[in-house]
Length: 65
View 1 (cartoon, helix red, strand yellow):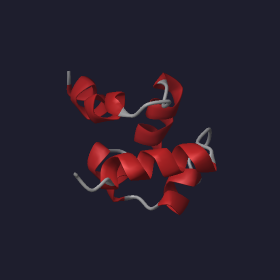
View 2 (view 1 turned 60 degrees about the vertical axis):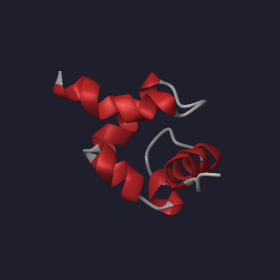
View 3 (view 1 turned 60 degrees about the horizontal axis):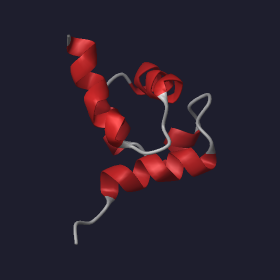
View 4 (view 1 turned 90 degrees about the vertical axis):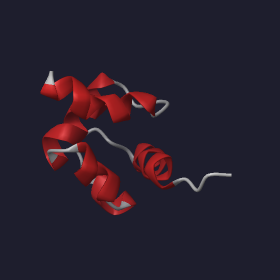
């Protein structure tokens, strides 16, 4: 159950599949740490390309409106 809650926020990111989600959680530990990560930090995760890192970062830092 705990794991489902942690992954829930990652479900919303388009183009990020289950294996990348697992890799991100394994690398950072929590969704909060993934949110805080820079594009460079996200890009260091095995299996996460520079383009994917940018998408993840922009998803968490998009300005509403």
